[in-house]
Image (cartoon, rainbow, N blue to C red; front, side, top):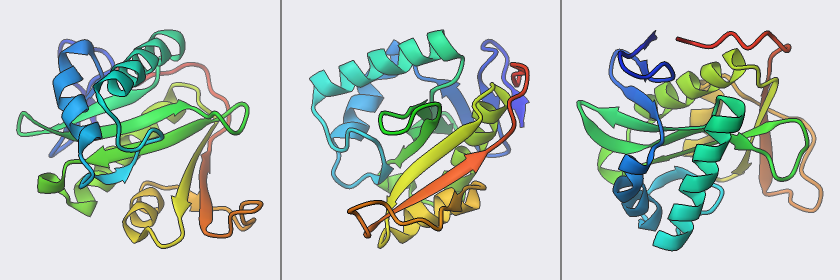
Length: 179
């Protein structure tokens, strides 16, 4: 994993390019979030343009405030999805891992690669605890989060036995980022 030229928070892996979301990605993100065929889990689910724009504003503010957030994922220059973290709305002092991949690029190994890269970046950026909520029957999300290094908690979610909570923890470090 190496930082790409031009943006200190960009990451290049052997097969993928991850860049912090930006307004130049809006059209790709709108199409992704409007598609019911997307593989993955984003907090807002399928949404319209206005909601996608609101999500983009939240993503940009998170990057600015915390130095971590959602990445666009490109393979050979083509947009294939999103992966990254957002502050959790359900648990204090942690972030929630999310991902979404376009149907044409659905490949669990690519998705795991993007998720594990985003997770490592978040931990290196000072995020101690990352969680993800997954439906028990969502085998793909379970494979992605598990393959990215997250573990399922043994405690079932109160009132939601069909939902599993995955988590990853790292001790607080100085804000040593991947540059």
